[in-house]
Image 1 (cartoon, rainbow, N blue to C red):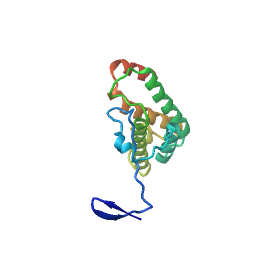
Image 2 (image 1 turned 90 degrees about the horizontal axis):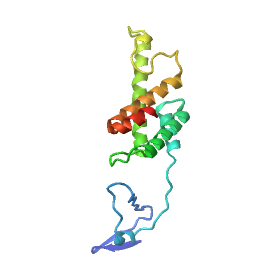
Image 3 (image 1 turned 120 degrees about the vertical axis):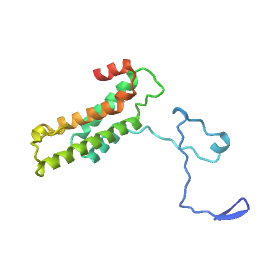
Image 4 (image 1 turned 180 degrees about the vertical axis):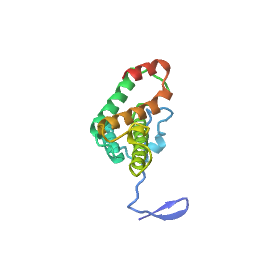
Length: 171
């Protein structure tokens, strides 16, 4: 099938679709103008399951206790959304959760790499190695919890106002 566009005949590829995603409720976004709205069919969307996404993300980073950690992170972000003061720069949604999980994954990889260097004949004992991962005699899930806690602090404390820092450390 062909169609006419600005004096040119263009072949229509039935395997191509054009989609527009809008989030008008999000800060800085505007509603799609009516003349463009008329050209597209609306599609219903669901709110993503943040906990499931967080769990899969943590699994892909190598965390063994990903289910429990994902639940804790999502619960914390839900509490932060409910209890913290309303600030324009606060974002406690999925985007922020993913940023924290990326940071946790980076810390996890750093600690794993440092541990592998220590195991492969470095002069330091495991007890002297710095960092959360430490030696293998401790609980792996406890080490993972500490890594996620460090990532949460790294990604959130610098954004919070003083009153909310107190709430954050209490959570």
